[in-house]
Image 1 (cartoon, rainbow, N blue to C red):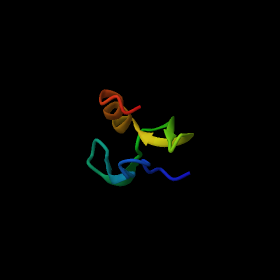
Image 2: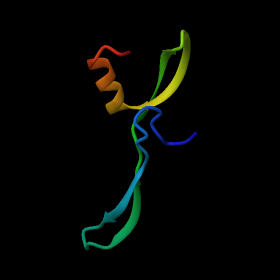
Image 3: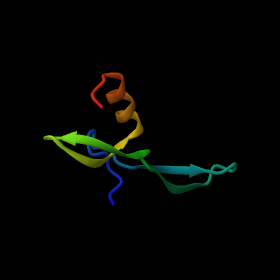
Length: 63
C-alpha cells in the first residue's frame, strides 16, 4: 500500500536525522494514515486518509 492520503495527496517527507554531534543521516516522516469507511456514490468504501484530513472532515460533518 502506498503511503499517500486519498483525499489530500499528502505523502511522506524526508530530511535529516541530527545526532548530538550534528551528524546528518537521512530519515523519513511518514503520514499518519487511518483506514476509514466512507460512502462514495451510495456504496461503502474503505479509504486511507491522513489523521489531519479525518479531523477536518469530522469537524465539517462530512463523515
